[in-house]
Length: 251
Ligand code: MF3
Ligand code: CO
Image 1 (cartoon, rainbow, N blue to C red):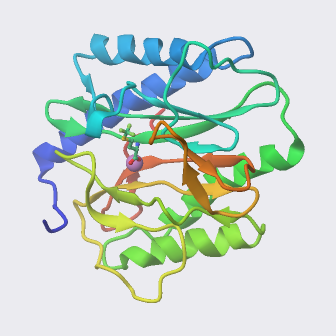
Image 2: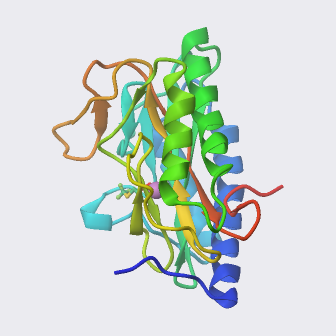
C-alpha cells in the first residue's frame, strides 16, 4: 500500500475525529491525580468516545484489551489499563488514545506529571513534547519524510536521552496504521517526498536512560530495559504546502 493522499472530504473527517480526540485528552488530563487507577481513565475515555458516536480504534486492535493505553514511568507505550494500577505523586503517565469517526482514525498521546515529579523527569516530558514541534517544522510538502526524523533525533540527542527505535510513527486514515513508518532516529536516506493531503501520526518516544526496550509478559506493555522513565508525545498532522495542521491539537 502506498501513502494515501486524503481528499478534501476525507480531511474534514480526519479533522473532526482528531478534534474530538483533542477534547477527550483535555478531559482526561483533568483526572490525573494521585489515587486514581488507569482503569478509571479508560472508563472515562470509553464513555467519551461513545458519547461522540465513535468507537475506540485501539480496542481489539490485534487483540488489544483496552480502550486507550496508559503507560506509567518505565512503561513506554501500550500499558493496559488496570483497576489495581494506581497513580501516585511523582509518577509520569502517558495516555495514548484514538477513535474512529465515520471511518476515519485519530491518534494522539500526551505524557502527564502526577503532582511533583523529579526535575530531570519533568524535563524529559517537556523535551519529548518539544521534539515533536522541532520535527514538524520540517513537515511541509516538498520536504522529505526523514527530515522530520532527523530533526527530532538532532533535538533529543542534545540532552543525551535514549530514542526508542523499536517503535515508530505512521501514516493514518481509514486505517490506524498506514504507510509510511516515521522513525524518531537518524536516517541516512531521505525517505518519501511529503505531499499535501498526507496525514501522519508523529510520535517521539524518549527515555531518560537508554532507548532499548522489552515487552512484559502480557505481550503488550513496552518497558525500557534499564527501567528508566520514558515519555511519549503524539499528534496526527496534515501535510500542506505551508506549516502542517496539527489535527489533534485545537483550541
Ligand atoms: N497509538 C498507538 C500508535 O501510536 C497504537 C496503539 S494500538 C494498541 O501506533 F492496540 F496498542 F492500542
Ligand atoms: Co500512533
